[in-house]
Length: 180
Image 1 (spheres, helix red, strand yellow):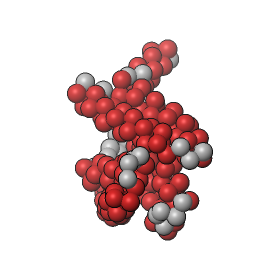
Image 2 (cartoon, one colour):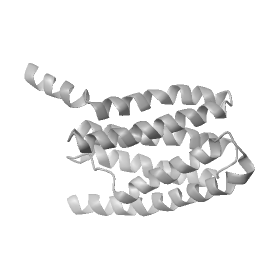
Image 3 (tube, helix red, strand yellow):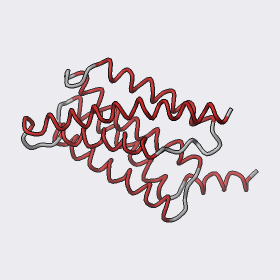
């Protein structure tokens, strides 16, 4: 039994998973900064979150450190880290509630499916593009420069992410259907 616990610890305590967990802990200051309307600092946290997301994937592939824990926790962390600022944008009436409700629905269903799959149901290319589109939208919405000039680009990336949300939802349901 001790050997099994060492393997579990070893599979969790690797560079990609540590980066993912650090991004998960960034959500707490993200929530606080959104609540007190410090959008310039939110911008910095979103950039840091994006860098850690890129690096955890890079190291997982490069060092062959892919784990089931990572396959589940990384996309879950991405969802949490992106949905919190999207909720704030909804609260500020920048994006419509109905679109965010659909995104939340998709993310909860896919997260549940991931826990039932042997490999954690890794993200598809389109899923990565979806996450990237939302990330770019958030960077644009929270950037500290001229809001008016870039606002429409932020909305375009948001809606691109929304469309990819729908497409990837259908794709993931097909994958799950074919594995039953």
